[in-house]
Amino acid sequence: MTTGSNKSLVPVILSGGSGTRLWPLSRRCFPKQFVSLFSDSELSLLQKTLKRIQSFDNISEPIIICNEEHRFVVAEQCKEINIKPKEIILEPCGRNTAPAILSGALRVFQENIDGNLLILSSDHIIVNIEQFKLAVKKSEKYSNDGKIVLFGVLPSNPETGYGYIEINKKPNLDDLEAKKIIKFIEKPNLKDAKQFLKSENFLWNSGIFMMKASTVINQMKKYVPNIYESVYESYENKKKDLDFIRLEIDNYKKCENLSIDVAIMEKTNLGIVLPLDKGWSDLGNWFSLWQNSQKDKDNNFVKGRVFSEKNKNCYFRSENRFLVALGLKDLVVIETDDVVYVGDINKSQDLKNIVNKLKINKEPESELHSLIFRPWGTYKSMLQGERWQVKIIKVKPGASLSLQMHHHRSEHWIVVKGTADVELDGKNILLSENQSIYIPLGSKHRLSNPGKMTLELIEVQSGAYLNEDDIVRYNDFYGREH
Image (cartoon, rainbow, N blue to C red):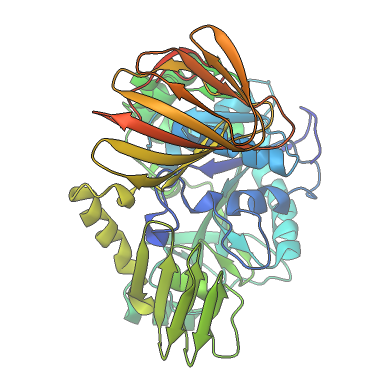
């Protein structure tokens, strides 16, 4: 990606969503933007978004806005594809797209550069990248004139899951001339969606924008001054934390939970629309993902260890176990190591309500994966009893866990791959494969990987309380306090 602070096009990538409609693959702790969803690539949706814009003219490093919980995942996924962001801004709490976009604009303005912001979601797919590239280039002249450019997608079907934009004239991909916004329409019923498709004066609202940093700042001041003041104060009191910018929480919490559409676009007279070709999707549910995936001769998507016989119009995905399906139609079957989901593919919009009920019932699987990502690697819970738990821990080369202590549990570590450097009560012990060590309750300890290959070990915990909040950190390379 082109570097340099004088680049006029600044991508601002919003990566704060929870993605519950693709549960159980996507969950709060590891939502869909970080997951590899397609069989033709191992890249996540965030990585695809970053790669998609690499070849754009005069483009700077991206600003990525995410929540604190996902900060190390974002940083790691950027590192995997050799992209160094201009900034990773951490939202202290979710407040929708208007405050997030404003924080990105303030970051750009900080450099005394009134750049064109290309606002992107981290979890979209765009098939016709060349047409998108042309539309972005065309939009810069409108943005330079103080307009707010919204990209509208030519509908391919009467979709009820998207918002629509009514425009004054049928769009033409060949001339890419801006169209006037008549009004915004929330997700319609099927009857209205069919009428919108027939009229050709309606576009899907992609949520992709182009606007100058000064334009969004001034429009926020004008239409939502309370949000502007809160975000401005939060940004002014930000803190640098390793490679991240932490927005101050007290002021940010005062923000209304408003989308950029409600905050500005439905009020301003600066909004215009440029058309995007068919082949865009926000992958909002399993049906949408199935529609946009490569399928076999029976219209099934299959990924993982799956044997499919006499099935039609299904989405099958196995993360671990062998999945065998016979004589099914219009179903989604997802297997992860802790959940199996089976549902009608045509009722995928209802899954969010199911997940909300699971949260009310305090089912941990509603939000948490058994595989947990940390800045130093991962851990995965394998077995658990009333007073014991078994985990698999993987530590990246050169990485270290915090120096810590537990009040309620002891631990036993067995190295199965690589080399472990264990600091225990001030002494360092080097362990190789098949060697083990006991960590008594109350002992200060740290696990490090001094080698050049991933360290894998089995951890057996025992004690009266085994939750992750039983950690007292004395020193942490990643700035974590808990």
